[in-house]
Length: 268
Image (cartoon, rainbow, N blue to C red; front, side, top):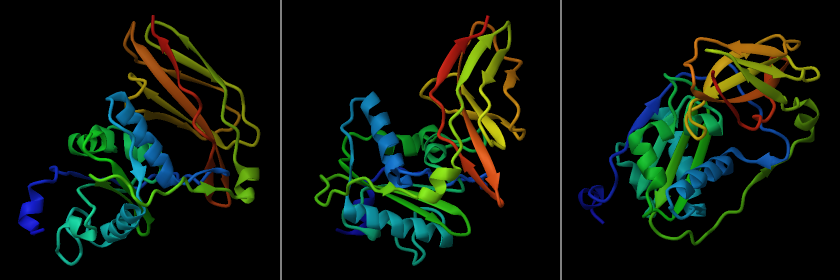
């Protein structure tokens, strides 16, 4: 197929470039790989709009990893040899790229107003929810920066990949527990109390006004003995949603717990 003709069939795509996180997360023991965590979130979003789930296609998976590595050299939808992105595979009909954020949830939903994820970008979101897509490849590459690429296909996956499970007993012993927390509200405040996590170096608190929307990092607490935080300056009679996780800093590496279940409360 000629390049000019194929260009008419693809969506308008956008790229997002952001700076790296100050704190990085190690892969949790006995969990799905980052790529399959992203696939789960993609399918959760598709389910909300009635779109069929995507399957991980081996050819698209390989193509997405090629494109993720290429982002380090030339970020965007043109390959380093100046050919269009879709020349990476005859199955490729849509592409999302992202550079800078490391974690699956962050690349999907962002980590603050200036660090947006795919679901906050109209073009990327349209690809994720496109009912015409039936297969996907998720690429992840960490070099001088962290690069992600989604490559979408219009045909059913004919080489379906099963979830890759990461299991590292060394990490298991170091991973902190997920904090348990409660919420209380005042006129324009939410008071968050949690149980201290053994050996925790600190905690991160995320908040949103939409349960399924973007969660912003509200506060990083670097004292492991802290068990309380008050979120102030909020709107009255407004529903707020919260998640919390703990972390341990050991030999310069930061290891996070899983995110806590989401809890919500309405200010008085």
